[in-house]
Image (cartoon, rainbow, N blue to C red):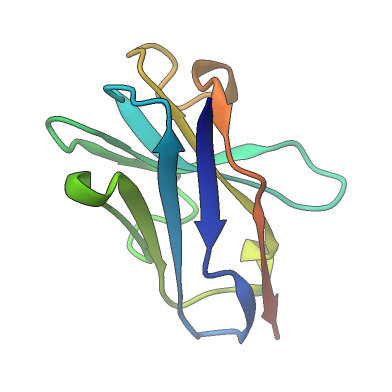
Length: 124
């Protein structure tokens, strides 16, 4: 069984920074992609950023480009999301997701493995 465990969420003022981590454990997969989605109250879960595991291609939602950076440590089976210049509209539960398949890089349907989520709250 695969486990994705997120950490690093919290409360921060607008303009501040947070770094999220997601560690994969359990059944070993050769991931194709590993990334982050978020869901604010009353809204659908949306794509934030993802990285392809072998080559390291990075994809970002327009709303976070230039502020968020995704990276990975293959040896630790861990993906990170550095979030800078946070805005109140970034407030959401952030979910780590991973999948060994190449399809649906930007879509929730493209990921079969999910973490439990970590809350990020940005105050104005």
